[in-house]
Image (cartoon, rainbow, N blue to C red):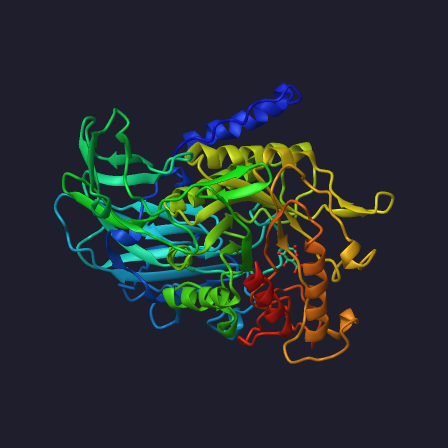
Length: 608
Ligand code: GCU
């Protein structure tokens, strides 16, 4: 994968920091065992795939004995004195894709290792290469095929793949995946986060088959500052330099060819006529076909321009106000992680009903069904990796992991024109280590895609009593295209003055988004509108009205995103009746019922 360029070194960065920064980057290039260094096949859903979804056998390995006892060999007793204290047959079976927590009561809070296993056939196909592709496994895993460890991956929200050409047999392949979701201080996210620590093979698993020489990756987009020039970079794998590659966009009467260079990459730029640029109001997608030799892949791609001009966010040349909402990748009624197209329909339909034109996919890359359907339905997207409180910014390995995760996110979704913002952090505190870490993440994003806006969410706005203004002091915001603020006025922060007098002087000269605001209410619980502990719908509605009034006093406000669309599960929401393990900031309850505040937000969006 393209290397993150080392962020421009500032004179404040001492040699030791420089070494600390360069060494892990160099090391990460040297190790290929870590799958993140492998390329990802673009558009897996547009390829020839054999689904490996379904019921898998499973073993709960609480004390991590399985690897030591090599249970991935799946041995069976032969002689009379043989015995094995495990078997994958006739035991626990778990759905894939799905988290394990929602499948059996015993696994609701489970943090540890679970082994998954299944058999599959792979009929021999001459001149083809095969890859095992995982949409995501939470949080880390090792993969074993026919008794051999073939790869590992860390990161619960991005895809990875393992080439198995020549390793798979025509029938009876035994695939075992050792999955572990134990939180660790050096992980992303780290030890405590406000969502459920779902574990498991949480997204689709497929066996992908491609020709020996195939289209491994492509990035096809409208030139950053052009309304009619399409730029395309296509990379082949297994082909000799000088191989011809073709792009076709029938509706635009485009058929262009280029040849690959010594790195297997072909680059094209061409102008088109009568292009309908994508927007939330008109989410136009074009059928794009990429072909070379025996390989041909197609998908729907949209073309749009997104840029910042002063304090404006400009889409296709027009200033934009973002009517956003967040949701976790979770179906509350099922108390489980979302993973299917039907799940995506449920989540996005509720956002559409609210009148949104953007989704902040909190706090991690969500599955491709959600991303692709959001694009079709006309939502701009903000996607981020879970740089959530408590990240070990001084740890080189953590920084390297985060860089790999954000690259996997950008590589997977770079052809989704709905993606407008790459989020690099949520609620971090100023420090040189944090700054270096985030600069590295920004360089990772931009090393793959320099067409989108870089954003981060901060919770550093405070009320300055002398100036009677809401202000913020974190010079790092100068390195971002857009600044986002999480601020819970009326919930975590009592009002220091009435909302109509709450004026902000934050990040002037840049667009500002309110990326989180809100408060909790238990659906159906009614009570005084001025008592927070009532957890009443009336209190939440009054809180929304106050915040919406304050937003009128933020001169560079260019979007709002209430926290959050649905009540969601969180292990540190302890109140036994008001919360019971749920964060109740949803505008919609865990059973899908709209609270009073939902209607205020709907009215606000209808007016903007
Ligand atoms: C934070 C955080 C969210 C969290 C929210 C809350 O701002 O970004 O992930 O759920 O506050 O406290 O409800």
